[in-house]
Image (cartoon, rainbow, N blue to C red; front, side):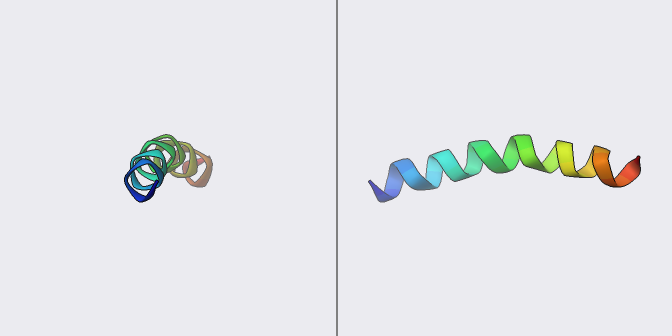
Length: 26
C-alpha cells in the first residue's frame, strides 16, 4: 500500500508541477 501511495503521489506531482508552474506563469 505504501509503495502504491508513493508512486501515485509522484504521478500526481508530475502533473501538478507543470500545471502549477503554468498557472503561476499566467
